[in-house]
Length: 404
Image 1 (cartoon, rainbow, N blue to C red):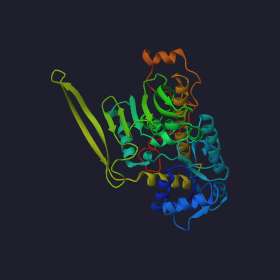
Image 2: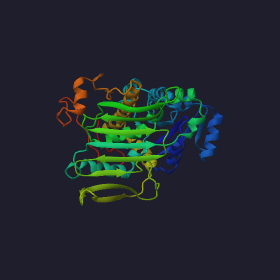
Image 3: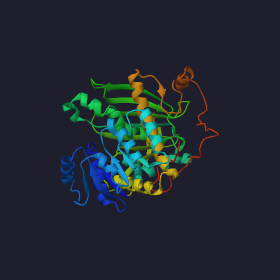
Image 4: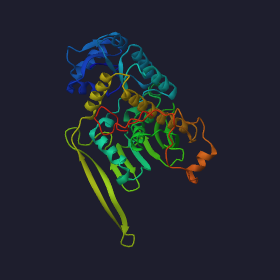
């Protein structure tokens, strides 16, 4: 697959360029940015081969028929426009997160891409072999139990914001920490609650904004069923020290991982996670007897795995069912991010977190959060499209396995 980079704003473009060098099925054929000088400087810094074409503009990339697919790494505020332009040019799209600044843009992008081009959000950890192994554990309801709650804590201290022009940050990255590290937390909600997982409602418990309204810190809840029994509890922050903690609780086991986004040992060593298989209080409530398994997973370069998965998706074509799975995963992640931010700006109200959910909540929904005993089974529409559970296949398919 012949890939070109559009926009040099995102620091993750460097990782994509490095992964392309290592891939056997992806060839980096071009780099486009705001000017020929900026592109040349970037390519020199990254050691890009001289045969890779330098474009003086991003438009020039989309006009080149030799380019099959693009990685879009422009600022969040400009992403939607460049994704639409890439769709119009017939280029497959690997886009940095968030894919849009609101759900209106995300749904418009979905309509533009569906059946025309492949679109995947650049979320590397989803493609790591460890993630597939963890999700496989969660899917075994007989041994793990029904997943009731997923908790994600992800943050890093963004010192660069202290010297940034606040207005510029608001213009370029209006979703702040929620659209950045919050995206990873939101994606784990889709992973944790299974093939039929659809976010229903969200409520922000606490949020901190800059003077220009950019979120720096947010805690919230996302509910994946109308009874509000399947809960993603998350905290994302640009103000706290670096952490990337995950815990998923079932009726019988707990899964824990303290480096779910970026394995601490890198891509050349085993990545691990823990399963708490037994826990009981004993000795007059003074001792906890607990059995914990540490599960090793073979080394894996998740960014390379992501790029190869994207290439295989492009090869399969936009009519392949997997193209809709990946597209909808990106849109649903955006729905969670947007709903949490909307709730925060409405003082913590419960809001719809899915384009299919009601636009407002009712007393019954709020009551069910605390008292009402309702069905715990996620309803299926008789007219719903069949789900695709592709969990046990290859790295080219998403671990949550749903086209919802």
